[in-house]
Length: 344
Image (cartoon, rainbow, N blue to C red; front, side, top):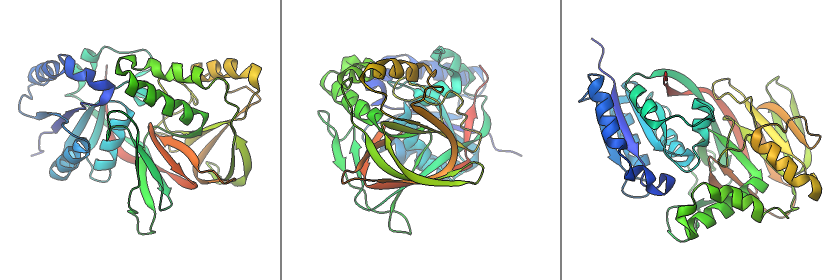
């Protein structure tokens, strides 16, 4: 006799500046599982400290494996933490878009915001689909920037190598990028820390803060295309995004065609367009209408490496988590994580 599925619903106290905790979300979840005849098949956890989300997901995945599903009420950073914790266990991942930007959820549910209650009502009935993940590898000494270690500022963290090759390995599920967009992201985080009520508007204000930026990022690249061809060279990137999902930065849409179940990453790279074209191109980038621009290139890739071509580290981010490193490698992992697809 098959075991009944078990669910862990994690409400992230940090996602969306804790707004999820001021709603009746917990009551909605209780009502949904009761109506589904599963009143004893779920647990709700509200995170209490940094790392709690990862710890709880790992314990649950170890106990229930492929019979478990973890739903995360949070944004891309919270989803990333859980994906990292449960990857390889067989446990499923689901999303309740309750963060500040909810960009990965836009790829799953569409850009038009769905009522949370509709998502919650479908949660007891997931259909598991195998989601692609991205493995990232950094050299020792990579710097990550924690949003939550200090309430007033971003905090530098230097993780110990965790791979057999002596490097720092991690996973991403949405977008990995570097260049202007990470400058925008870093400034957005600073704005949200100084004024938490600003919420998602911080991303757009940060674009305006960087409107005069002409910074380019000379970078050596080696990419394996989905066709198997390997290309390499050097490019002066203005911004570059490896996309498993289609959205990041509170709705910017670098890869409208992105499908996190197709086994490839859509690589969108942008060259400096000049001061007069900067704002129009950014607006097109926001709306996903930039692909025919002469300053934009798009290709399907499965693995590769980026290496700074000057004496500056690459400033980038994955799923909204900022890093600084002289280089990094990436590899798509097709069908790596069961994902709770909902009929809404």
